[in-house]
Length: 223
Image (spheres, rainbow, N blue to C red):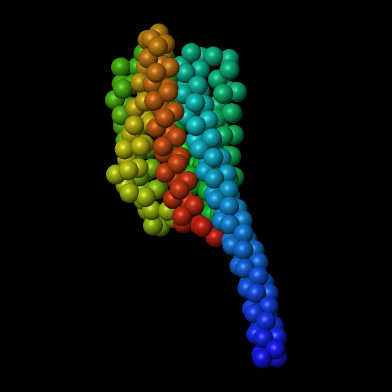
């Protein structure tokens, strides 16, 4: 009787020890999984935040450069340089994911937005060109079409977004920036800052849309 009791006690003791070891291993594994998930989340959040900040800076620099060009400000060249640096930073952020050539496509697209759409518009406004609005509409439509094609075209490496979503975001941004510039030109500074804020808000939404698409497409780069 004593022998069987001792054997049972030993078996129970071994079972308890194994249970403790198994629980410790399971708990450690769960902690490691949580740390990995946290790192993925943090990496993605950092990228989202960086892209968001660059997009926001871009629209403010875009408006500022257009306004200074309209005013023939001595700060125009410095403002344009800052805008160019910002666009290049966006390219640099995306290069590790997509490579230089692909990222440069976006850089070129954004350069065309300023040069062909807004810089041209500011010069025509300054010269009281009666075709300023018509030319803006034409150039903006060209840029809008190029943007829709860029972000919803499977021929490049970037994610394919809903073309209607891209059209709405690009169209809203272009119009908000234009209305802000028009307000500045007419000395309506309240409307200028109001529409600058609207452009800022739309651009933030645009940035988050693009960032989340890139993160989902390239989840392996955020581990």
